[in-house]
Length: 208
Image 1 (tube, rainbow, N blue to C red):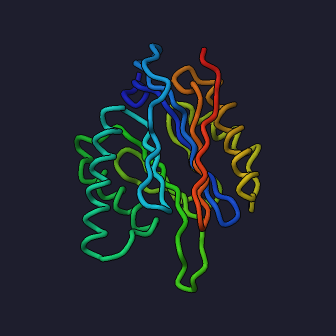
Image 2 (cartoon, one colour):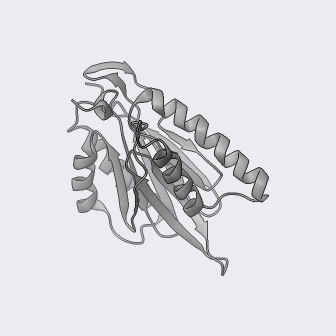
């Protein structure tokens, strides 16, 4: 069994019309043994960027603190808020620095970026554990239920979903996918990021 599957957990991000959503399950386990049903995998980076960290639980805590430090240093040096694209490359370079003894995490990022003309553009990306970036226009997945998430998301996702429709789509995708994976589940948390607000909702899931 891979070390990536040790603590379980899955994350998905989806693009909508001028909005993005990111969802993660709440289970923390030691393989098949459940430990916690309220484990945080998705963290706010700025008001417009969220990051999901599926993988080894100890590295989740370590990387969250490391990214928080690097984003704060960027904000102090540059005197402005970091953009989602820049943050994605920051994540990639941080992971690649440790490629010979990597963090066992596959980050998923979702945010709203501003174009030079002043418009907003949804942004999602994911990397592997040594920082190889994957940009997508529809959805990105990671974690122990990633193959199931791919299948359900391919069937449910549509372009230009409004925030409420996007919430319904990502919620159904997450809940139905983790029901088919023994190492993920026990409820989920969903964040919908729009131009002016972030909506966070917690979903109840099967606890078996």
